[in-house]
Image (cartoon, rainbow, N blue to C red; front, side, top):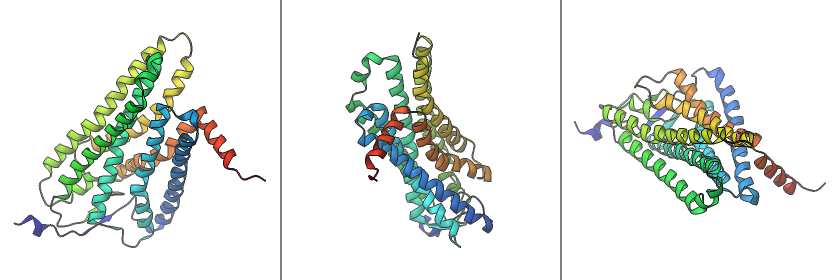
Length: 309
């Protein structure tokens, strides 16, 4: 049969966190507050980097771009989730779903390697402090960032292409809070074993490889710190914030994408909220509250912008 004749689905229905009507207003309020705080928090870090010359260093260069990715990351999904909380029909057009999958994949894949670049930056700063300015030149930082975007974009393009060329002839109910590849594949009217293999292989290449690079960097950092006679506390403090973000992000992502194929459960939807909503919310607080340079820069900018009495 002609595959084109099988593809009848023009829109998908998103289940969301719950189909209980009484909870929708609560979810809308909570997610709206989280979204506003996340955007403002990450924007404050970007502004602090742009407006404070003291932060014009590789560490904050990557942090500012990571904050930008977090804004994009949460904006891909949360506005649609907010709309669905108030809508009678929680639908998303077929091509809207495609765009959401691709954009989400770009942000997620890029964040993995930006986190790896941040770990490498900390490795050079602690293990090779005398050569830091030579190694972490602006050109190198830009190359690491561009490489991260290329990996994220290529990975997402592969996933999106092989997923949305499948035939979808119904049902069209996605048992998830947003358009994601695993629950979408369950709706395809075709064998998806190749897709599952590609998801696993590329997830290993993007998620696991970047995680291994981070682990190697921190093993070297820990060894170097243990050999220090002084300054251990400062060295630990520069790495703790990054490790907290890595733990939250990679723990939830690996749980979702490196497990055997199965139906998406309510537990999976909660885990998805953890890495798509909660992690971007926590990032600016973790970095700003634990980093005196960022706090001072934000306070200084606030005092400059505050209107005189």
